[in-house]
Length: 399
Image 1 (cartoon, helix red, strand yellow):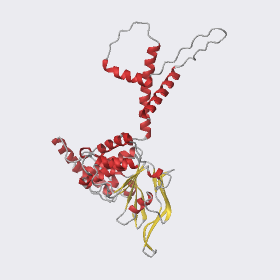
Image 2 (cartoon, helix red, strand yellow):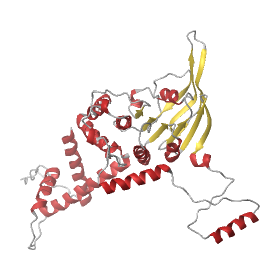
Image 3 (tube, one colour):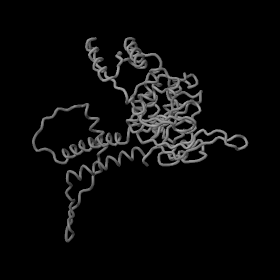
């Protein structure tokens, strides 16, 4: 599985009432999207973007060709459960509030109640809808509906996230927040495929893009390679004198070319966000929904989660080994210690996690019977045994 998404001569032809070929929506599409990549699918209206997404998801059957998604068919339940989809229009039940909406989608994926509750609160906080979580989604603005649409696309912790016009209807601040979230998701190992008419958004976050027209790929490649003008040079300096600029112009004229000297400009989006942020800091509060770019823990990559659990386990094991060694081998010297009442609950919790039932001591055998003795446990064996006991007890508690 070298690619997260791969298509082979994917074609979709819509026929008329008589069965005659009428429209080539997608024609001979060969697309390859790497894992852990943000890929942008661009094109004007009617170029075949949405049709392509529907074929990848198994919502439309291709006329010819094949699409492989996450190593299988996108219509298969085991593959579909690893995909998050945010459609161009958020089709939501308007009488459900935000929490109920996410709970509904969590149930569709078969998530346990505890997992649903944890993810719902984390996602509402991530997209900034926690203050309005009890409002019916039918009263949401279009921008708020897009945010709840993004949250429902992440409820199943997908490996592949497909976003169709994710920033449509959002204000500049919401747009920037969504773009930052997409970048953070990509850093956490997610693969993102998005379609957008806002080319500035695509330029900011996509690693590679493909431009569709008439159902065919007209151009494809890395964003910086496609946009870079190799026949020109750009020099950015600090504030310099007019005399220095004249000397630079003379050097350039000696090279048989000309130059234009201007001051660099910010993007309007950057200026807008900087102005509003400063106003919010002065006022001490922000109007509307609040959102950040902090990714929820359950969306973290497996390696991060495993490292976190391993660190907790090592801490418990090392503490329990020290606790047992003090119990089994009391010190002969008198030690004056200061009691810390606040650490007592931690000690009780540790005893509960690492406590083992006492085994009966072997009785001495009289006569010809041999006395069996326990093999001596090394420190490494003791740590391994304690770790296994902790995992067993935690597993039993979860079950």
